[in-house]
Image (tube, rainbow, N blue to C red; front, top):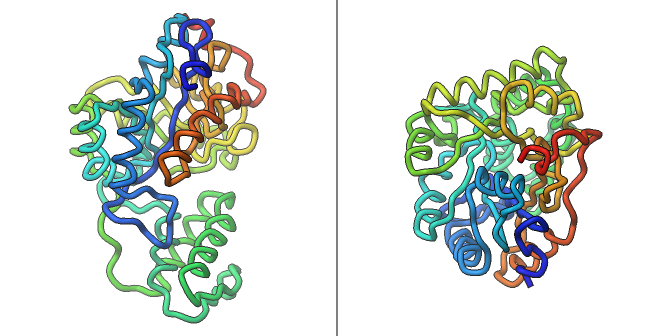
Length: 326
């Protein structure tokens, strides 16, 4: 079935998977994050039923019309330390290449705003989380399901706030309980170099993971260009690929941000629009999907359904398809 939906050649389709973290053990507060055992069988299934490729090879194969059948590529967003400590050994065991998109402002000890929310909700005493003094309402915390709802509700409430406001509010939220910070969550520069040394691709994901559509043009340009320069300084190699933060075309970024990425010198970029890339896909808006299902059958069927979704929206950009870049 996979070969029928992704036959290769000029009709080839490239399915690109998104991951963020792989944990040693499952987290009840964020059950969508795969644990090591789940990620292990997922990569085994990819290796046995599909053709995992480096993203660069997949993009080049689409451009030339030489993509092999059943082609897939694995990507990670944000730059979590467990990408190196947990995911990399599994990827190497199965011979699956991956691209890691790094938000460079958090390297070596920073914490992303959503992780501060997660850890605050995790540590808050049982009962109620009263944040009315911060304009964030009241959240019951009577059990794991309530904590999950509070976490997601707060993330959604703050996601599209202006960057400085979001950082200020989240900093205040993190200070509510005080105490020691959580263990280091993000990669450090040495681990980024080690990923590159292991043959993995390192891509850019801005500096501070802002929603680009909320920034003025100069700030957006700096976020894109400075992340690329920082990663090239760390790895000593070219940073060829970019991932839009949050990544929904027409909402989280627009044609003007596609132009910024192109002007910064990237070869291609990925979104979070679901679908599989074909030769007519915009080189700077390659679709991806998140493999949510936690069973082998559901995971496999999800990969097939994604191949049926088409090539993803282009947010108004019809220039530089992959075929035109051959």
